[in-house]
Image (cartoon, rainbow, N blue to C red):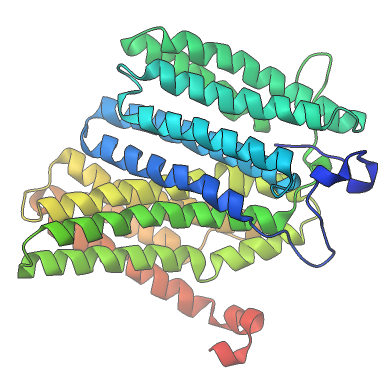
Length: 406
Protein backbone atom coordinates (compact mmCIF):
# COMPACT_ATOMS: atom_id res chain seq x y z
CA UNK A 1 0.00 0.00 0.00
CA UNK A 2 1.33 3.38 -0.82
CA UNK A 3 1.76 6.46 1.28
CA UNK A 4 2.05 9.14 -1.35
CA UNK A 5 2.46 12.88 -1.66
CA UNK A 6 -0.05 15.17 -3.26
CA UNK A 7 0.45 15.60 -6.99
CA UNK A 8 1.80 19.12 -6.60
CA UNK A 9 4.63 17.83 -4.38
CA UNK A 10 5.82 15.24 -6.88
CA UNK A 11 8.47 16.32 -9.41
CA UNK A 12 7.22 13.83 -12.03
CA UNK A 13 3.43 14.31 -12.10
CA UNK A 14 3.28 12.50 -15.43
CA UNK A 15 3.22 9.17 -13.57
CA UNK A 16 0.33 10.17 -11.34
CA UNK A 17 -3.33 9.57 -12.01
CA UNK A 18 -5.10 12.83 -12.83
CA UNK A 19 -7.63 13.54 -10.10
CA UNK A 20 -10.62 15.81 -10.40
CA UNK A 21 -12.66 16.93 -7.36
CA UNK A 22 -15.99 15.11 -7.11
CA UNK A 23 -14.97 12.29 -9.47
CA UNK A 24 -12.96 9.13 -9.17
CA UNK A 25 -10.37 7.64 -11.47
CA UNK A 26 -11.59 5.14 -14.00
CA UNK A 27 -10.34 1.59 -14.19
CA UNK A 28 -8.14 1.55 -17.28
CA UNK A 29 -8.06 -1.00 -20.07
CA UNK A 30 -4.60 -2.23 -19.12
CA UNK A 31 -5.84 -2.94 -15.59
CA UNK A 32 -8.68 -5.02 -17.01
CA UNK A 33 -6.18 -6.77 -19.28
CA UNK A 34 -4.01 -7.52 -16.24
CA UNK A 35 -7.04 -9.06 -14.51
CA UNK A 36 -7.37 -11.70 -17.24
CA UNK A 37 -4.48 -13.57 -15.64
CA UNK A 38 -6.43 -13.75 -12.41
CA UNK A 39 -9.47 -15.16 -14.17
CA UNK A 40 -7.18 -18.08 -14.94
CA UNK A 41 -5.78 -18.09 -11.39
CA UNK A 42 -9.26 -18.38 -9.87
CA UNK A 43 -10.05 -21.32 -12.17
CA UNK A 44 -6.79 -22.99 -11.18
CA UNK A 45 -7.56 -22.57 -7.49
CA UNK A 46 -11.09 -23.95 -7.69
CA UNK A 47 -10.00 -26.97 -9.75
CA UNK A 48 -7.07 -27.65 -7.43
CA UNK A 49 -9.41 -27.72 -4.44
CA UNK A 50 -11.93 -29.89 -6.29
CA UNK A 51 -9.28 -32.50 -7.05
CA UNK A 52 -7.98 -32.63 -3.47
CA UNK A 53 -10.92 -32.32 -1.09
CA UNK A 54 -8.90 -33.14 2.03
CA UNK A 55 -7.92 -31.08 5.06
CA UNK A 56 -4.36 -30.72 3.81
CA UNK A 57 -5.58 -29.95 0.29
CA UNK A 58 -7.78 -27.18 1.70
CA UNK A 59 -4.89 -25.72 3.71
CA UNK A 60 -2.65 -25.64 0.65
CA UNK A 61 -5.28 -24.05 -1.57
CA UNK A 62 -6.02 -21.51 1.17
CA UNK A 63 -2.36 -20.48 1.25
CA UNK A 64 -2.22 -20.24 -2.54
CA UNK A 65 -5.42 -18.20 -2.62
CA UNK A 66 -4.11 -15.78 0.00
CA UNK A 67 -0.94 -15.34 -2.04
CA UNK A 68 -2.91 -14.72 -5.26
CA UNK A 69 -5.15 -12.20 -3.53
CA UNK A 70 -2.20 -10.43 -1.92
CA UNK A 71 -0.26 -9.97 -5.13
CA UNK A 72 -3.41 -8.70 -6.88
CA UNK A 73 -4.49 -6.24 -4.17
CA UNK A 74 -0.98 -4.82 -3.81
CA UNK A 75 -0.99 -4.13 -7.54
CA UNK A 76 -4.39 -2.51 -7.10
CA UNK A 77 -2.92 -0.14 -4.53
CA UNK A 78 -0.12 0.83 -6.89
CA UNK A 79 -2.41 1.53 -9.84
CA UNK A 80 -4.72 3.45 -7.52
CA UNK A 81 -2.09 6.16 -7.46
CA UNK A 82 0.04 5.77 -10.58
CA UNK A 83 -1.51 6.28 -14.00
CA UNK A 84 -1.48 2.98 -15.95
CA UNK A 85 -1.85 4.90 -19.20
CA UNK A 86 1.71 6.24 -18.82
CA UNK A 87 4.28 4.14 -20.66
CA UNK A 88 6.49 3.27 -17.68
CA UNK A 89 3.52 2.26 -15.54
CA UNK A 90 1.89 0.34 -18.38
CA UNK A 91 5.09 -1.63 -18.94
CA UNK A 92 5.19 -2.41 -15.23
CA UNK A 93 1.62 -3.72 -15.30
CA UNK A 94 2.33 -5.86 -18.36
CA UNK A 95 5.48 -7.29 -16.77
CA UNK A 96 3.47 -8.10 -13.65
CA UNK A 97 0.87 -9.72 -15.87
CA UNK A 98 3.43 -12.08 -17.38
CA UNK A 99 4.78 -12.99 -13.95
CA UNK A 100 1.19 -13.53 -12.81
CA UNK A 101 0.65 -15.90 -15.73
CA UNK A 102 3.67 -17.95 -14.67
CA UNK A 103 2.42 -17.94 -11.09
CA UNK A 104 -1.05 -19.10 -12.18
CA UNK A 105 0.28 -21.97 -14.29
CA UNK A 106 2.22 -23.24 -11.28
CA UNK A 107 -0.70 -23.21 -8.80
CA UNK A 108 -1.86 -26.86 -9.13
CA UNK A 109 1.70 -28.16 -8.58
CA UNK A 110 3.02 -25.42 -6.31
CA UNK A 111 3.64 -28.01 -3.56
CA UNK A 112 5.13 -30.45 -6.02
CA UNK A 113 7.32 -29.84 -9.06
CA UNK A 114 6.34 -26.22 -9.76
CA UNK A 115 7.18 -24.71 -6.38
CA UNK A 116 10.22 -22.82 -7.64
CA UNK A 117 8.28 -21.28 -10.54
CA UNK A 118 5.48 -20.21 -8.21
CA UNK A 119 7.78 -18.70 -5.59
CA UNK A 120 10.05 -16.91 -8.04
CA UNK A 121 7.10 -15.42 -9.92
CA UNK A 122 5.48 -14.31 -6.67
CA UNK A 123 8.64 -12.73 -5.28
CA UNK A 124 9.38 -11.04 -8.60
CA UNK A 125 5.93 -9.44 -8.57
CA UNK A 126 6.03 -8.30 -4.96
CA UNK A 127 9.61 -7.07 -4.76
CA UNK A 128 9.83 -5.86 -8.36
CA UNK A 129 6.71 -3.73 -8.04
CA UNK A 130 7.97 -2.18 -4.79
CA UNK A 131 11.38 -1.42 -6.30
CA UNK A 132 9.60 0.33 -9.18
CA UNK A 133 7.84 2.52 -6.63
CA UNK A 134 11.13 3.31 -4.89
CA UNK A 135 12.43 4.48 -8.27
CA UNK A 136 9.25 6.37 -9.14
CA UNK A 137 9.32 8.21 -5.79
CA UNK A 138 13.04 8.95 -5.75
CA UNK A 139 12.41 12.70 -5.86
CA UNK A 140 9.26 12.68 -3.74
CA UNK A 141 8.96 13.88 -0.16
CA UNK A 142 10.41 11.90 2.70
CA UNK A 143 7.12 10.41 3.88
CA UNK A 144 6.41 8.82 0.51
CA UNK A 145 9.96 7.53 0.02
CA UNK A 146 10.22 6.10 3.51
CA UNK A 147 6.93 4.27 3.12
CA UNK A 148 8.23 2.32 0.16
CA UNK A 149 11.56 1.76 1.82
CA UNK A 150 9.55 0.04 4.56
CA UNK A 151 7.36 -1.96 2.19
CA UNK A 152 10.35 -3.08 0.12
CA UNK A 153 12.14 -4.16 3.30
CA UNK A 154 9.18 -6.27 4.43
CA UNK A 155 8.72 -7.89 1.04
CA UNK A 156 12.41 -8.56 0.56
CA UNK A 157 12.56 -10.40 3.90
CA UNK A 158 9.50 -12.47 3.08
CA UNK A 159 10.80 -13.02 -0.45
CA UNK A 160 13.80 -14.82 1.00
CA UNK A 161 11.44 -17.05 3.01
CA UNK A 162 9.36 -17.82 -0.09
CA UNK A 163 12.47 -18.84 -2.01
CA UNK A 164 13.83 -20.95 0.85
CA UNK A 165 10.48 -22.73 0.98
CA UNK A 166 10.60 -23.34 -2.75
CA UNK A 167 13.82 -25.33 -2.33
CA UNK A 168 12.35 -27.33 0.56
CA UNK A 169 9.74 -30.02 0.12
CA UNK A 170 6.63 -31.44 1.73
CA UNK A 171 5.64 -30.02 5.11
CA UNK A 172 8.81 -27.93 5.32
CA UNK A 173 7.80 -26.00 2.21
CA UNK A 174 4.36 -25.41 3.63
CA UNK A 175 5.84 -24.18 6.92
CA UNK A 176 8.23 -21.71 5.25
CA UNK A 177 5.45 -20.33 3.08
CA UNK A 178 3.00 -20.01 5.97
CA UNK A 179 5.55 -17.94 7.87
CA UNK A 180 6.29 -15.78 4.80
CA UNK A 181 2.64 -15.14 4.08
CA UNK A 182 1.83 -14.49 7.73
CA UNK A 183 4.50 -11.78 7.89
CA UNK A 184 3.19 -10.19 4.69
CA UNK A 185 -0.38 -10.11 5.98
CA UNK A 186 0.85 -8.56 9.21
CA UNK A 187 2.56 -5.74 7.29
CA UNK A 188 -0.38 -3.38 6.69
CA UNK A 189 -1.75 -4.03 10.19
CA UNK A 190 1.68 -3.13 11.62
CA UNK A 191 1.88 -0.10 9.31
CA UNK A 192 5.06 -1.64 7.83
CA UNK A 193 7.10 -0.71 10.87
CA UNK A 194 10.86 -0.91 10.32
CA UNK A 195 13.42 0.00 13.01
CA UNK A 196 15.08 3.26 12.10
CA UNK A 197 12.37 4.14 9.56
CA UNK A 198 9.38 4.10 11.88
CA UNK A 199 5.89 3.29 10.63
CA UNK A 200 3.43 4.79 8.20
CA UNK A 201 -0.03 6.22 8.87
CA UNK A 202 -3.27 5.45 7.04
CA UNK A 203 -4.16 9.15 7.11
CA UNK A 204 -1.13 9.82 4.92
CA UNK A 205 -2.09 7.19 2.33
CA UNK A 206 -3.45 9.16 -0.59
CA UNK A 207 -6.09 6.61 -1.61
CA UNK A 208 -8.56 7.36 -4.38
CA UNK A 209 -11.52 5.60 -2.82
CA UNK A 210 -13.81 5.26 -5.81
CA UNK A 211 -11.14 3.55 -7.88
CA UNK A 212 -10.25 1.15 -5.06
CA UNK A 213 -13.91 0.20 -4.58
CA UNK A 214 -14.37 -0.40 -8.31
CA UNK A 215 -11.22 -2.51 -8.61
CA UNK A 216 -12.28 -4.83 -5.79
CA UNK A 217 -15.81 -5.14 -7.15
CA UNK A 218 -14.34 -6.21 -10.49
CA UNK A 219 -12.37 -8.97 -8.77
CA UNK A 220 -15.64 -10.18 -7.24
CA UNK A 221 -17.03 -10.36 -10.78
CA UNK A 222 -13.96 -12.40 -11.83
CA UNK A 223 -14.64 -14.87 -9.04
CA UNK A 224 -18.37 -15.11 -9.85
CA UNK A 225 -17.38 -15.77 -13.44
CA UNK A 226 -15.85 -19.08 -12.35
CA UNK A 227 -19.29 -20.30 -11.27
CA UNK A 228 -20.73 -19.29 -14.62
CA UNK A 229 -17.95 -21.13 -16.46
CA UNK A 230 -18.56 -24.27 -14.38
CA UNK A 231 -22.29 -24.17 -15.08
CA UNK A 232 -21.90 -23.53 -18.78
CA UNK A 233 -19.20 -26.11 -19.46
CA UNK A 234 -20.90 -28.85 -17.46
CA UNK A 235 -24.28 -28.21 -19.03
CA UNK A 236 -22.79 -28.13 -22.54
CA UNK A 237 -20.97 -31.44 -22.11
CA UNK A 238 -23.77 -33.41 -20.42
CA UNK A 239 -27.02 -35.00 -21.45
CA UNK A 240 -29.89 -32.55 -21.02
CA UNK A 241 -31.76 -34.58 -18.41
CA UNK A 242 -34.38 -33.12 -16.07
CA UNK A 243 -31.98 -33.56 -13.16
CA UNK A 244 -29.25 -31.60 -14.91
CA UNK A 245 -31.67 -28.83 -15.82
CA UNK A 246 -32.81 -28.54 -12.20
CA UNK A 247 -29.25 -28.60 -10.86
CA UNK A 248 -28.07 -26.00 -13.34
CA UNK A 249 -31.00 -23.69 -12.54
CA UNK A 250 -30.31 -24.10 -8.82
CA UNK A 251 -26.64 -23.21 -9.26
CA UNK A 252 -27.51 -20.22 -11.46
CA UNK A 253 -30.01 -18.83 -8.94
CA UNK A 254 -27.41 -19.23 -6.20
CA UNK A 255 -24.88 -17.30 -8.30
CA UNK A 256 -27.43 -14.53 -8.95
CA UNK A 257 -28.22 -14.33 -5.22
CA UNK A 258 -24.53 -13.95 -4.43
CA UNK A 259 -24.24 -11.20 -7.03
CA UNK A 260 -27.31 -9.47 -5.58
CA UNK A 261 -26.07 -9.56 -1.98
CA UNK A 262 -22.88 -7.74 -2.91
CA UNK A 263 -23.84 -5.56 -5.87
CA UNK A 264 -27.41 -4.48 -5.12
CA UNK A 265 -26.39 -1.90 -2.51
CA UNK A 266 -23.10 -3.01 -0.99
CA UNK A 267 -20.82 -1.75 -3.75
CA UNK A 268 -22.40 1.69 -4.02
CA UNK A 269 -22.57 2.22 -0.27
CA UNK A 270 -18.98 1.09 0.10
CA UNK A 271 -17.82 3.38 -2.69
CA UNK A 272 -19.63 6.38 -1.21
CA UNK A 273 -18.28 5.60 2.24
CA UNK A 274 -14.61 5.45 1.22
CA UNK A 275 -14.93 8.50 -1.06
CA UNK A 276 -16.25 10.59 1.83
CA UNK A 277 -14.14 9.05 4.57
CA UNK A 278 -11.87 11.26 6.66
CA UNK A 279 -9.37 8.40 6.57
CA UNK A 280 -9.82 6.55 3.25
CA UNK A 281 -6.53 4.72 3.74
CA UNK A 282 -7.89 3.00 6.83
CA UNK A 283 -11.10 2.00 5.03
CA UNK A 284 -9.11 0.69 2.06
CA UNK A 285 -6.84 -1.29 4.36
CA UNK A 286 -9.59 -2.97 6.41
CA UNK A 287 -12.65 -3.17 4.17
CA UNK A 288 -11.01 -3.78 0.80
CA UNK A 289 -7.56 -5.25 1.47
CA UNK A 290 -8.49 -7.67 4.26
CA UNK A 291 -12.26 -8.24 4.31
CA UNK A 292 -12.71 -8.69 0.57
CA UNK A 293 -10.58 -11.80 0.64
CA UNK A 294 -13.38 -13.54 2.63
CA UNK A 295 -15.89 -12.56 -0.04
CA UNK A 296 -13.74 -13.84 -2.90
CA UNK A 297 -12.81 -17.02 -1.02
CA UNK A 298 -16.49 -17.74 -0.44
CA UNK A 299 -17.23 -17.43 -4.16
CA UNK A 300 -14.37 -19.73 -5.15
CA UNK A 301 -15.42 -22.41 -2.66
CA UNK A 302 -19.05 -22.04 -3.80
CA UNK A 303 -17.92 -22.61 -7.40
CA UNK A 304 -16.42 -25.92 -6.27
CA UNK A 305 -19.76 -26.72 -4.65
CA UNK A 306 -21.54 -25.98 -7.93
CA UNK A 307 -19.26 -28.37 -9.76
CA UNK A 308 -19.88 -31.08 -7.16
CA UNK A 309 -23.66 -30.70 -7.43
CA UNK A 310 -23.54 -30.77 -11.22
CA UNK A 311 -21.22 -33.79 -11.38
CA UNK A 312 -22.86 -36.01 -8.74
CA UNK A 313 -26.19 -34.52 -7.65
CA UNK A 314 -27.64 -37.70 -6.13
CA UNK A 315 -24.57 -38.79 -4.17
CA UNK A 316 -24.84 -38.83 -0.39
CA UNK A 317 -22.98 -35.77 0.90
CA UNK A 318 -19.80 -36.67 2.76
CA UNK A 319 -17.91 -34.48 5.21
CA UNK A 320 -15.68 -32.82 2.61
CA UNK A 321 -18.61 -32.04 0.32
CA UNK A 322 -20.63 -30.65 3.24
CA UNK A 323 -17.70 -28.41 4.19
CA UNK A 324 -17.59 -27.04 0.65
CA UNK A 325 -21.33 -26.67 0.11
CA UNK A 326 -21.92 -24.91 3.44
CA UNK A 327 -18.51 -23.29 3.86
CA UNK A 328 -18.57 -21.35 0.60
CA UNK A 329 -21.85 -19.48 1.27
CA UNK A 330 -20.88 -19.04 4.94
CA UNK A 331 -17.57 -17.39 4.03
CA UNK A 332 -19.35 -15.20 1.51
CA UNK A 333 -22.04 -14.02 3.94
CA UNK A 334 -19.50 -13.44 6.72
CA UNK A 335 -17.25 -11.44 4.40
CA UNK A 336 -20.15 -9.32 3.18
CA UNK A 337 -21.42 -8.76 6.71
CA UNK A 338 -18.03 -7.59 7.98
CA UNK A 339 -17.45 -5.47 4.88
CA UNK A 340 -20.81 -3.72 5.19
CA UNK A 341 -20.33 -3.22 8.92
CA UNK A 342 -16.93 -1.65 8.28
CA UNK A 343 -17.85 0.75 5.48
CA UNK A 344 -21.28 1.69 6.83
CA UNK A 345 -20.13 1.89 10.46
CA UNK A 346 -23.23 0.02 11.63
CA UNK A 347 -23.99 -3.33 13.18
CA UNK A 348 -23.61 -6.43 11.03
CA UNK A 349 -26.68 -6.80 8.77
CA UNK A 350 -29.36 -8.89 10.48
CA UNK A 351 -30.17 -10.63 7.19
CA UNK A 352 -26.58 -11.87 6.89
CA UNK A 353 -26.47 -13.07 10.50
CA UNK A 354 -29.74 -14.91 9.95
CA UNK A 355 -28.31 -16.51 6.82
CA UNK A 356 -25.24 -17.67 8.75
CA UNK A 357 -27.55 -19.10 11.40
CA UNK A 358 -29.57 -21.01 8.79
CA UNK A 359 -26.39 -22.45 7.28
CA UNK A 360 -25.27 -23.56 10.75
CA UNK A 361 -28.63 -25.28 11.26
CA UNK A 362 -28.08 -27.26 8.06
CA UNK A 363 -25.06 -28.96 9.65
CA UNK A 364 -27.35 -31.24 11.64
CA UNK A 365 -29.27 -32.88 8.73
CA UNK A 366 -26.47 -32.45 6.16
CA UNK A 367 -25.08 -36.00 6.40
CA UNK A 368 -28.48 -37.41 5.48
CA UNK A 369 -28.90 -35.20 2.42
CA UNK A 370 -27.79 -35.61 -1.16
CA UNK A 371 -25.35 -33.16 -2.72
CA UNK A 372 -28.14 -31.61 -4.79
CA UNK A 373 -30.56 -31.23 -1.88
CA UNK A 374 -27.88 -29.55 0.21
CA UNK A 375 -26.95 -27.26 -2.69
CA UNK A 376 -30.63 -26.38 -3.08
CA UNK A 377 -30.90 -25.59 0.62
CA UNK A 378 -27.91 -23.23 0.52
CA UNK A 379 -29.33 -21.52 -2.56
CA UNK A 380 -32.59 -20.93 -0.67
CA UNK A 381 -30.61 -19.38 2.19
CA UNK A 382 -28.77 -17.03 -0.18
CA UNK A 383 -32.02 -16.00 -1.87
CA UNK A 384 -33.64 -15.31 1.52
CA UNK A 385 -30.71 -13.10 2.54
CA UNK A 386 -30.77 -11.23 -0.78
CA UNK A 387 -34.53 -10.60 -0.65
CA UNK A 388 -34.45 -9.69 3.05
CA UNK A 389 -31.71 -7.12 2.63
CA UNK A 390 -33.27 -5.73 -0.54
CA UNK A 391 -36.56 -5.06 1.24
CA UNK A 392 -34.91 -3.70 4.38
CA UNK A 393 -32.91 -1.16 2.36
CA UNK A 394 -35.68 -0.07 -0.01
CA UNK A 395 -35.89 3.41 1.57
CA UNK A 396 -32.15 3.87 1.31
CA UNK A 397 -32.23 2.70 -2.31
CA UNK A 398 -34.87 5.33 -3.05
CA UNK A 399 -32.66 7.95 -1.43
CA UNK A 400 -29.56 6.90 -3.36
CA UNK A 401 -30.99 6.14 -6.78
CA UNK A 402 -34.24 8.11 -6.83
CA UNK A 403 -37.86 7.09 -6.60
CA UNK A 404 -38.02 6.30 -10.33
CA UNK A 405 -35.80 3.27 -9.88
CA UNK A 406 -38.24 1.80 -7.42
